[in-house]
Image (cartoon, rainbow, N blue to C red; front, side):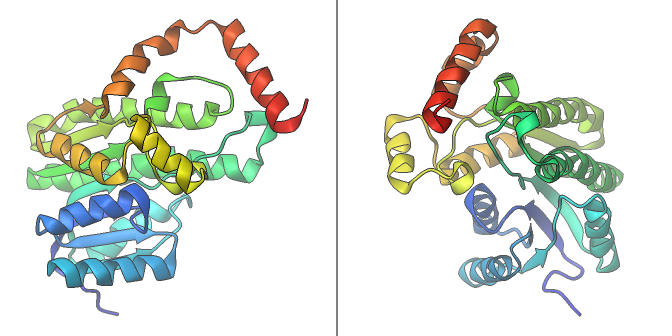
Length: 268
């Protein structure tokens, strides 16, 4: 079946059905870019594509895919090749979050997070980055996190995978720079989305206090850094305040906080 973006140059955004990914897609559509939007929410991603196409007058295709599958990146690259779709901008945004010890979370959840944040991001950069290098132009934005600097209990796997994304992006920035491709890692702190399962009033409070950033503001800052060719950006003044402290917190204090948190959460 023909797609709306057959034969066109596009910005490919993963996890674009809501939150930060949706805002990246909206910002890019506002700049006149055609869109290939990918999500594991089939109906929602189709609705988003239709909405942005109608609002901004661009071509947009919503594609369903579970990007945690090992073969997902290859399938997506093949899909673009079969339809002569040129990816000029790649936004690797899709991700998940959970708070639990490594030994306390299900094996399935661990596989999903590692596959989604590590394997798929790497292969997307590999496939589409090679195409960009051959053409001599392109942009890749990979979503890391401030958590990459915080090896704290409960977010150990999330932090480790986001640290991988940051390292990969910063190295690829220099690998592809002379080939005309710019690779940027975006490392935000807390963002007011549904990722953390917080109540709406808590999200609003976090934004007012400056602890959380709105997804709209983050998307603007991320794209600004990407188009400027920056290697890594950590939006938000409060993040620059706390990031240097990450390696200074004694393990004894970390364990104490964890025990207190476990007591209030589980009563033990």
